[in-house]
Length: 252
Ligand SMILES: Nc1ncnc2c1ncn2[C@@H]1O[C@H](COP(=O)(O)OP(=O)(O)OP(=O)(O)O)[C@@H](O)[C@H]1O
Ligand SMILES: [Mg+2]
Image (cartoon, rainbow, N blue to C red; front, side):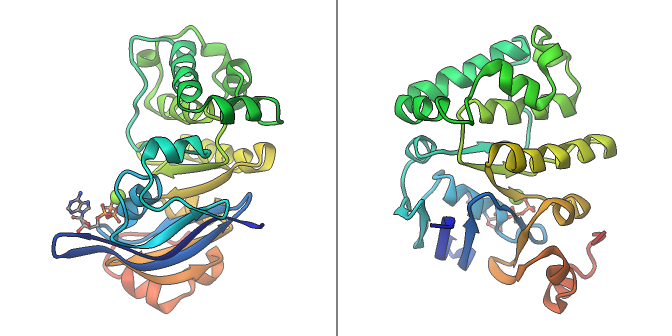
């Protein structure tokens, strides 16, 4: 099976508003897949439905061939889907190591079986190993609150990695980062896939980052899919250019 995630005809309504309208796409194993679209397009809603924060109004989400539509976020986490958050969420008074350990304890409690089967595989969720991978191994004793905003976001990625996910949902990983931190975040996203085999689904407004790291990109506008393809094909798509008209985006 090459598709890790399959989203079919997904609809999510809020009262009379259709935030996500008939969205379908597949994410292949070890792919970096981006979702972009203007403000209010429905990206976060789509993401939240996949992560189990609320159920779809119609349509389905399959993970590893199994229907996970409407399952709780805990159940979805147990299956090997983790997410990172747009805002930093590390405990400020606790050290880097304590934050990673806390994430490990939560992952273990949620899912002992998945956790241990993964530990024995190449993607072992070992604290030192994760800290080295994200470049925070020299800052294990530093309180999270003493780290820069960018490093706290990186710590958030490490916390998600402690669950040894198969699929990582990243919510605006570049938001709030300075230009050099954005480059580092892009490199880290690539290494997640290249070195750990983790499949990445990311929602992001930063076009250079999205275009630089994604294998394929889904563009949605007003809840509806308008384009799906490689960065180059999406950049050249007239419907995409029209959707972004008047918005200050650079398709670098
Ligand atoms: N919990 C909710 N209840 C009601 N309406 C919602 C809810 N969540 C999102 N919406 C509405 O759904 C639409 C899509 O919102 P969503 O947050 O998914 O957009 P987005 O593409 O993530 O936008 P942005 O790029 O600004 O983050 C908006 O009109 C929003 O107001
Ligand atoms: Mg959003």
